[in-house]
Length: 176
Image 1 (cartoon, rainbow, N blue to C red):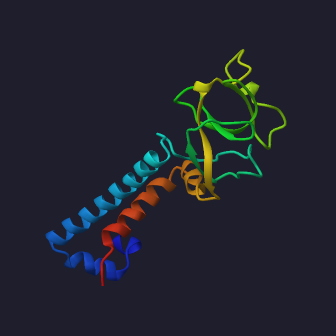
Image 2 (tube, rainbow, N blue to C red):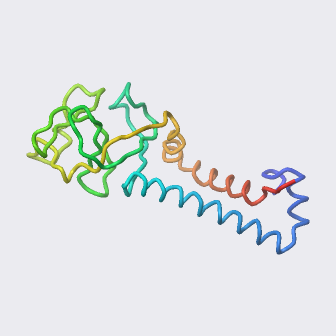
Image 3 (spheres, rainbow, N blue to C red):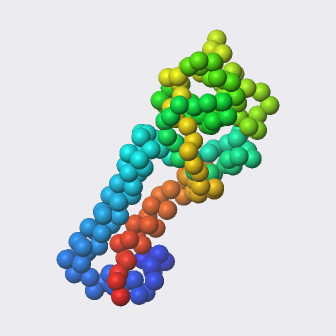
């Protein structure tokens, strides 16, 4: 069974490992996980945002942003033309659309690829977004890097396979 996942060289290395080497590999794997978490927290601090990165899930902002692009978010005062991130309930997926009209502290948004403004997405009876509805604004992006996230949510089997593969690679990595 192991020979289906690992090469014969990896199997031989595993058999020769002492308890100390296994603990060292496990510690290295833990460092990798902690480093990933720390990078996320670093982005949170630099961008002053609890959710500093989002993945574009639809084509409503095309051609500016395509499905799968990673967006970097930072809270700041927005003006007409800025791309704002809004969310009514913490359980909902945040929406990234352009501010097309600003009225004092209220704003009207619209997806670049949408025909009409976003009033239909707002709460019943609400015509504009309030300042508290807007989480942050887009400050940068990386094209298509978020496709892995979309695939992992679309194909439920992909996430455990990726996690297992990365874990095996980190555990079996060795300096030669």
